[in-house]
Image (tube, rainbow, N blue to C red):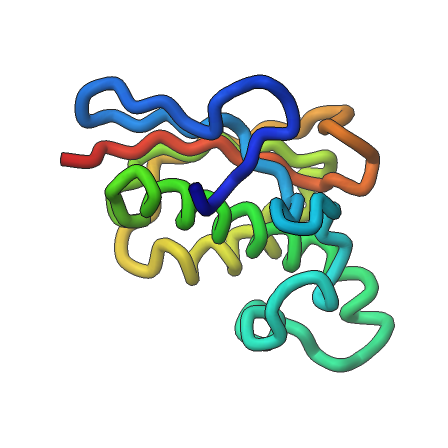
Length: 146
């Protein structure tokens, strides 16, 4: 399976009829098992699309949440596709942030994955996410795939 890989003993997703429920996805590269910490940890073309400026101070401040946002949404895309769907089938997102000030940057990345119609959305600030303080975001998704 491509896409999100659970870091513990739970399913990346469960399909019940036409509905697919994804577990929360954090920004971990499943092949390397490493947390995405910035633009250097994602494909160069993706980093350029989502806002890498080449300016150290800007990229150091915005890079972690932008890169993590891209990784989480790309893993959701891969997982939905492995279940037989497309991102257009995602109708609900629950987004957990360590810091709600990151939401506007995340939102710019999310628009690239949902350019036409945004899913219904819940945004929550939490005091901690697994597995470390380097994880800034977790997103769970629900899709309807016929």
